[in-house]
Length: 330
Ligand SMILES: Cc1cc2nc3c(=O)[nH]c(=O)nc-3n(C[C@H](O)[C@H](O)[C@H](O)COP(=O)(O)OP(=O)(O)OC[C@H]3O[C@@H](n4cnc5c(N)ncnc54)[C@H](O)[C@@H]3O)c2cc1C
Ligand code: SF4
Image 1 (cartoon, rainbow, N blue to C red):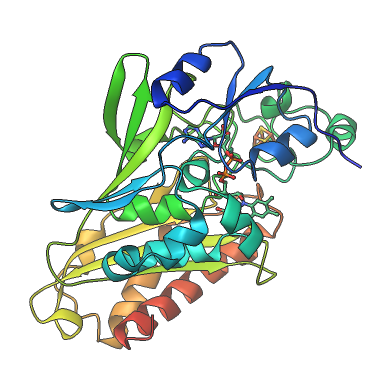
Image 2 (image 1 turned 90 degrees about the vertical axis):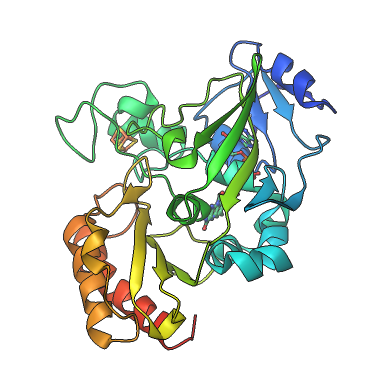
């Protein structure tokens, strides 16, 4: 049986007090604990104190002008079922509803999902397993087992909500000792699996702000796993198509394709302008989107499934998702 290490815990009721408690060296935030606690059991970290968000007022979902504002403490279950999210950003509702299992979605929060630690088949193991193989960059060693000779950890960000929210141009509000600052969600991540968040250790992610679509839009989230439940994504692609006034029968005027589970940051597919002017309802459009994604999204052996298979399957799943969107099935 894996046991938790010893730690203290504080449960502030004000954001300012939570931020002050994070000044303790090594202190960590705990929200639902569904990522943090398993990692502590695996001895991936040993914080002296946890700062719980359980009593902070971060459970709101509201409309603020042209944005939807979602508190970091909103659970994934609530997000998946919220009528405003379902109406305005169905790909986010879908991604939240696909995380893990009902029990984990009842506990897990949006803030925790976006601040999820990176994962790797060589590190998310017991301490003995890691020792037997030899420590890597993320576990205190000097090598990478995924990219031999590599100097930067490429562990995967396996959050289901992160690629979707990046595809929707979301921003996050961080609250630190100097007050609040707003950054694009994309800028929260850096390409280093050891320290993949740009938030300071004493900053809390308190809110996510997502702009509402200014016109007709269709969006989808592709997640493929071996099991249909309690599995992190092995293929993860968020799709967003802004359409002209004709809607689903019209032409694409903006497109965003963002993949998760590849590297330590969500990966944006470039040159989507090539899709502008295409009709979503035209079967050739699904092929064009699949080709673009397949050419740029290159899985590594960092998650526990064959990278070559995952690479080949990305265009297959993307093509199906675009076809389903065009048919009104998603
Ligand atoms: C068996 C299993 C299967 C899973 N499957 C999936 C899956 O399919 N998809 C998926 O996306 N996730 C999955 N997860 C991971 C996890 O359950 C979810 O990502 C969940 O949303 C994490 O939220 P939490 O509130 O429990 O985070 P916590 O565990 O409390 O925290 C996660 C990390 O975020 C930090 N953190 C939390 N909140 C904040 C905040 N507001 N500001 C700053 N830092 C913060 C914590 O310090 C910690 O480092 C799985 C977990 C398990 C155990
Ligand atoms: S990507 Fe390399 S350095 Fe990072 S956790 Fe995996 S094996 Fe370790």
